[in-house]
Length: 173
Image (cartoon, rainbow, N blue to C red; front, side, top):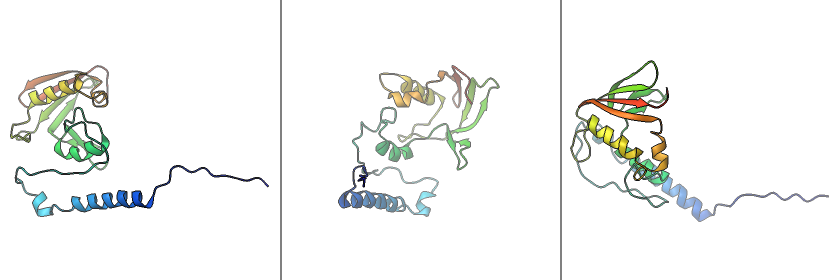
């Protein structure tokens, strides 16, 4: 009779399992600490401290350089894109209130929402978006993974304070 040996991957110790699930439960509980009334305030109180624990070291808090998933996920709450996705994965307004796509799929024009502020109180405008895109594309600053998101971006043009045009190298839907 032949003997069969089943190879299994590394086992998870009871201690590691409890630490992992405990951390996940603590994170889930922490997400519920901000009450609905506080979260829905039009002008929440400024300041405070954001604390989170990770299993990996951060390269810093710069979203253009930091690509560690365990750090970048909590930091996602501190940034906003031009567009967002709804639950059906359809584009919806983010910082951009509206956008227009040229028929050739090479030129995208974004009208930014007015009154969107950075953490320091400065208003987000087209020049700031352009600066961020150029910074991400700079090989000395932007991480290769982050730069790849803008790999098709040929040029960013500021049309006015709240209007930005992105010209692509190749058509893209």
